[in-house]
Image (cartoon, rainbow over all chains, first blue to last red; front, side, top):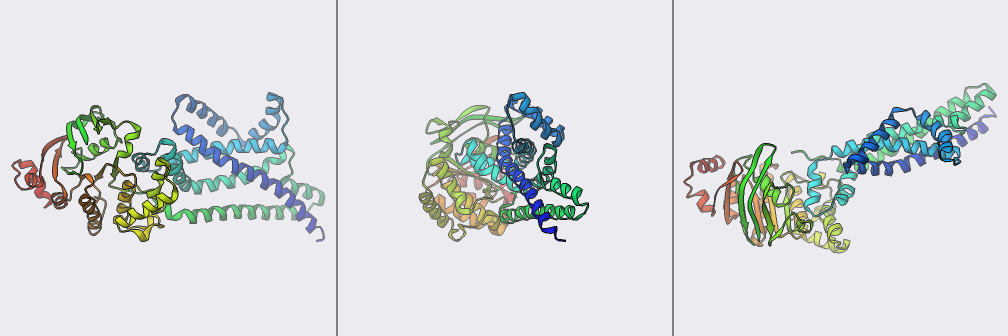
Length: 219
Length: 235
């Protein structure tokens, strides 16, 4: 059992990679998703057509495809170099922005139109109404779905090894091959569970704190 | 002060307002009565520019209300309150003064506290709308509308979503506003209340103004059988 310490340490390094990609994904894609949802709400036909096609492309291809496309394809297309971390972040942020913008858009539709009217009669303009009244409420009602997306983003990181990054899963596999023991897999599983549990707990806390204004007026 | 001239409006093929004209003078309290679907709400919503009219004009001091700057000249209190649920009571009141009129937070808060005192809810400043009763919610909505200093305050059936025992606290706030010489147009089915506070009563039906007069004219010396029947229904 004297290998347990180094194994955990090695897996934690992989965990750091997993965590960083996840963090970058969530931190950037949420505001971007709000922005995309806002742009789509402006109902510009041309812009919406483009975003519609783009959404179809993103949702119509597997994440692994997009990851490989960004890592190998984008450098060829634009003659630039991308580190695996950059490529992974770009691919993940892109995908999660699109998925979450659809969720937020759906939740905006669910906000009572009286809320918009209340803002309008108080003299607020469209931007003020959207950003101070509508979005905060849409984000609150979207919390359970956004939590799912945040968890999906953890699982998404298990693809990182395909572009040569040493995430939790890859690290576990490396040790497994070397030692022929199940230990690293079990520890990796525990790390995933802890990570997942922390995310769920975080969202639960946010939901609790926002619960007192989770009401929809009905007639 | 506000003149509504020959306005008409249709939803698809259904006319909801037909050639409606109305003058609202400063300090006047106008009661709008009539059966559901008569166009009372639509008329009020047109005056606050929430609905577009198909023809006619609505002007405040001879300026058209469709001008964005005119929006805050009118205020409206909705039947189902429409408070912002993610904001506290005080924030509901101070949000628009801050972001629309660029009033500083401390000044807006002071004014907000004064308005809360006026509607008798000083102790609820930091509560959320979900923690209030219906009557309290509507009183906050009134304070919120007043915060923008509108020249006229419209009430679209302000007590219709309330339990009977909560109605009075809202009506007494409106009564106080009328005493303070606020210009008010109120659509309501509370006949006794309308009779008491309005100086002019308008009876609407099928998108038209059918009768207009003092409360005594409408409620006591009524000769129109249809209006008589309608009023009796509520007494």
